[in-house]
Amino acid sequence: MIKINQVIVVEGKYDKIKLSGFIDGLIITTEGFGVFKDKEKLELIRLMAKKRGIILMTDSDSAGFIIRNFLSQAVKEGQVTHVYIPEIAGKERRKDTASADGLLGVEGVNEQVITDALAKAGITEGAKDDFTPVTKLQMYDDGFYGRENSASLRTALCKQLGLPSRISSNMLPRVISDVCGEKEYKKAVNAIFSKKTEQN
Image (cartoon, rainbow, N blue to C red; front, side, top):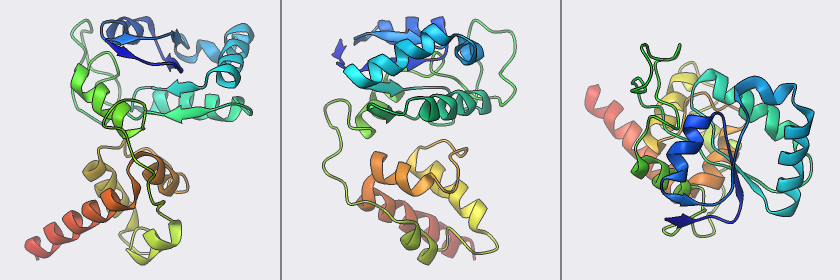
């Protein structure tokens, strides 16, 4: 069991069941979009963010990002740590069809994927050291902004770093700084551009 002091916020009960199998800690569900109308649940999440800090672990699909963004803006005070599940195509076993985006959610990925995502965010052992931040200017110089193919390069970068491609362009430098740091960023950039050189 992995002991976690912060409160983990996930979307649904199946996500909670999945995490409860190997995480020792408090896990709260948003009931999907239910948190938008549930003032008591929202107040509880705000309180937990102030007292203990929260970990947002939503699915990497569009719905997950809507919930993540809503909670990020709703929690004005307190600590919020973002844990990102990589985009993995597939369907949860209990469902007849895949989600609209065709991606596995928290409940569908294996334990190692979640453990790795927690470590990347600095939550568990093997966690990040003090990362050198990555700036938007640095990413601009590397071609991830302001060029004709910048959007596709950002998508490739997210894939290389195991991050969801839906992270907004403005938020991406901060996420990379918090989750990966400059060293991993530079490795990913080299990998992307060496592949492009090989293709040409």
